[in-house]
Amino acid sequence: MKNLNFSLLALLLSLLMLSCGEEQAKTNDDLKVEYPEELNELDNFEALSLKPYNINALIYVPDATANIGASTAPEIIHEPNDYKWEIKVGQNFHMTIEDWGDENVLKDHLDELENQSVYAIEFLEKEDGFAYYKASLNVKGQEDNNSVGVDHVTYHVVAQHSIEGVNYLFKTNKDGHQKPITDLMAKSVKSVQPISEPS
Image (cartoon, rainbow, N blue to C red):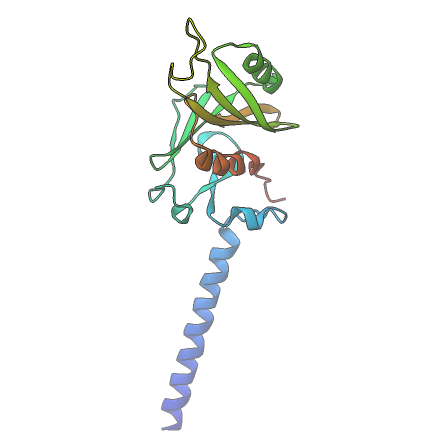
């Protein structure tokens, strides 16, 4: 009886040690990146590696708890040798990434916005490497009449990140979004971080 109890105890301890070893192996193999000052803001987000798409970086995108209809896995669309990527999370979240090589393109992008006449641009936030703006369609008629035309307002974000010497522009798709979606997108484009290889 003592031998049976001893054998059962030895078997249980072996299984426990084996399961702990497997858990440790999984933890060591997983890529973990932390953003200490932003962790609270990224509660409803999940890390998405862009490495399989030839960008050595992580971006945080909304998960199923963000209430934007993002119950499906993020989808990345990219044609080989193209300079553009699309990230879609559900029906409502759609952003693009553009590879601009060594060009510092963000300033040109913002200048172009300010010099066009189709939309009235109002910058809600503008800082080094990032801009959040509201675009309102300019409606012009023969007379000033508030009933002429339809209000068309969209919100946009754009951020430039340099990854391994290449400048990437992360931005809303050209049509823009409603403000709640763009607020989430602002967090996403700010969260981009290069993946550092273990040394």
